[in-house]
Each structure stands twice: as C-alpha cells, then as structure tokens.
Length: 312
Length: 274
Image 1 (cartoon, rainbow over the protein chains, first blue to last red):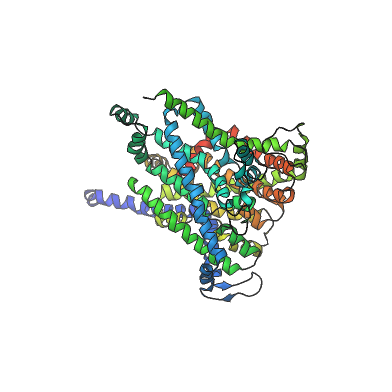
Image 2 (image 1 turned 90 degrees about the horizontal axis):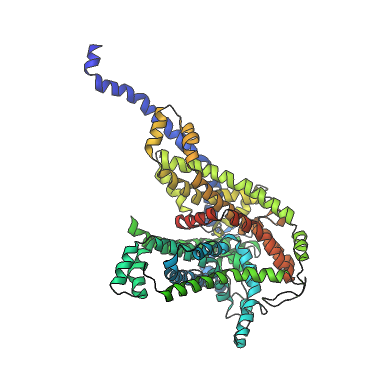
C-alpha cells in the first residue's frame, strides 16, 4: 500500500485513465451512431444515384430493355451534337443575366442606398425585395410569361413611351428568348444580391468613409477604394449562388419557353429531362448530366477559392 | 455620416424604383386575374367589373384543397425528419468530433453544389423499383438525402461554436451523450434550427423538378409542381391562370409576411452559408 502511495500519482492516473479511455471509445461509437441516419439517406438518395448516373452514362439504354455498354460514345456524341452542346452554351450565356446583371445592379444600388440603410424605407424594402425569393420559381415564370407576352405589361410600357417598333413576343422570338428568360432570373436574384451586399456594406467601419470624404474623395472613388474591397466575401456568395442558379436553371425555362423557340433557350437541366423521359435515351441523358455536373464544379470551385481565400 | 441632399434623394428614388420593379409583376397578375375568364386583357388594365369569382373558380379548377393537403403532408414528411437527422449529425461532427469526423464532413460537403438534375435519372428508376413512383414518398425520401449536405453543414457550423466547457460541466454532472444532446444542446439550438426549418420549408414547398419527374398526379405533388400542372391545363385562359397562380403562391406569402423577420434573416444566412 505504501509502495503504491509513493508512486501514487502516476498509478492513480493510470487507474483513472483506464475507464476513461474505454469511455472515450464508447463515446466515439455513440457519436458515430448519431451520424448514421444522415449518412444513410445521403448515401441512398444522393451518392448511389450519383454513381449510377456515371454508370448509365457508359450505356446505350432506353430504360426498359437490356443496356449495352458503349464506352465513351455518349460523351463523344455530346460534343458533336448541336442540340446538347448548344444547351450548355445557353446555360453559360444565362450566367450573364442570372449572375452578372443582378450582382452588378445590386452592387450599384446597394452602394447608393447604403447611406440610409436604417431608414424606414430601407426596412420596408427588405421585405419587398425578398418576395421573389419566397415564391416558387414556377410562379415567377408564369408571371413573367404573361408580362412579356405580346399584350403584356412590357410591350404596353414600350408603346406608352413610343417605342412601338421594339414590341414583340419576347419569349417567342429567336433573338430575344434567351435574354427574356434571363430577365426573369435577374428579377429573382436582384433583391437577394442587393440586400446581401448592403448588409456587407453596413459592416464596414464608417470612419473609413468619413476619412475618405475629408480627403476629398467623391462617391465613385469611395466606392472603388473602400466599398468594393471590403465586400469580397459577400460578392463571392452572390456570384456562387447566382451562377449555380444559372447553370442549373430548370423551373423558369420549363414554364416560360420549354426550351424554345427551336432550341433557343434549351438548357442542360431541361435537355437531361427530355432525353431521359421523352426520347428514352437514358445513357445519353446521364452523360450530359455528368458533363453538366463537372462544368458546375469547374466554374463554382474557383469562385469559392478566389473569394474565400482572404479569410483563411 | 456626410451625405449630400442630392444623394439622399437619388437613393430614395432608386430604392422605390427597385421595389416597383419587384412588385409590378404581382400587381399585373392580380389585375389580370380580375378580368372575365377566357378574355385576353392588356398587361396592366383595370377590369370594368372585377370578377372576384375567378378566384373561387380557380380554387375549384386547381383542386386547391387537395393541393394544400398534399403540400402539407410532404412538408410534414420532409422538414421535421431532415431537421432531426441533420441536427444529430451536426452535433456529432461539430461538437463530439468522433474519429474520422473530418472525412465524414467532407463527404457531405461534396454534395453542396450538386444540381438535382445530376441524380434525377437514377432517382426515377430507384423510385420505380421501390414501387414509389406517383406517391408523395417519391418526393419526400430523395429530398431527405438531397437536403443533407446543406443541413448538416448548417447544424455543424452551429455546434462548432458551442463552448466545450458547457459539455464538460454536464459530463461531470453525470450526463450521458444523449442527455447532453437533448437537455443541454438541443434547447440552445433553437435559433439555428428555426432558420434551417424555414429554409427547408420554403425549398420543399417550391420544389419543382422532383415533383414533375417523379409524380404525375398534381394532387400528390408539392405546391410548385401542382402549379406547373395547372399551367399546362389552363395556360390559355389567362385570367383563370393568373387567379390560380395567385392562389397557389398565397400560402407562402402569408407565411412569409407573418414571420418576415425570421425569413429574411434565414434567407440571408442561408445564402451566406450556401
């Protein structure tokens, strides 16, 4: 006993640690068990389908009879086919309308509105400008299809200001259909972008602006010297969210043009749907889906890196 | 702050202009809905006699009662369960950090930018083989999985910031992992949970792709999916289509206006974390 006492400290720790170690291991298992439900639904309904998409993309399969292995044929056809390849180009073009326009407009308006961000008008605007974010995209599509029809509000306004020559069925015209779909996306995203950027701007130290003004900087100098550099993260968020919305667009296009006229507004999301469920070319649809996911990653990951690096 | 008068006025005008642009489509939709059914009114015009009855007609034509019930069932099947399993996973990965937690989290994060179109084709065959096509389960089950990347990241971000001392104190008082979770951490997670709940509610209500592909019967779909079917059926009767669209988006508008503060902050945070 005495012996034990003299070497007491390490001995006691050993005694205390033994069950503690077991406890830790048990706790580790309990902790892992808590992840299991989430992991199961994720594996079954996301990772497994993801792997299957890749697998299908190497098959010629109509969804009913036996599938035959065709190697990378579906992928080579993807690049030769103007319809499928065109859909990817359309999605890239939509980035201009779904992303650049709302981010730029949001940036400009937020910079101007910043000065009275706490007024009652600004508070009301927070509710109003979020409305497009809350309603289904389908509803936005229906609204704007009506607005941009030949007798819709857009043409009415044009006639009122004497621009009759410009009026047309915006979504039915080969030249204007894609930009018209873009307008719908821009309308949906503008409010969110503006409010996010505004929130970012209000976090900037007002002393910086005071100093700039005292140094004689105008609104423009102020914007480029102070506002823009401080918004890196918010800009990253806006661009990421809107670019994904542009590339993955489905709801708005499905409702407003169904890809037409011709294939003027066909996007990969819609083309995958048509190929798989109407032409029954499941393998081809899957190859497009894989290429499409790779494209999304290739565009979104660099944006994330560029805009988040500063924080880490 | 030094703001010139001219700038202040310019700001106000600009903000009002933005709000007008945001609201104009709603107003056009509403006024058009009041025109006689079957007519083809001009974009923004007051009807001679507002046809309030259009809303009743659209309510019946769209089978609104069944649609609402269907959406509610899908919400009940999706949101609480997603919240529960994401919270458990988030608590484990963010706070308990079992061995391998980094890799597990990374696997979830992988799914963050995944467009739903990337998995929709196999999901269709999966649901067919399970015999679930054209049932609400075909929407509920995939959504549970598809929400996990975002929901787990969201809850993990919350639990990572919870102080370690809190858990140590509870452990010393003899709390097991489950008690630690349910008695200490769950009550403290209410704000994070309600924001996530609002986002999941909204995304479920507005989910279109899964509804269109996996369920043919509009009365088994989400609200957005049902709206798509309604447009297909009544697309040529503009006033009725407008009335129906308004009816279908009214529930979200009501919920939004009732909880607008929570909604706005959830949407802002949701964008930032997404």
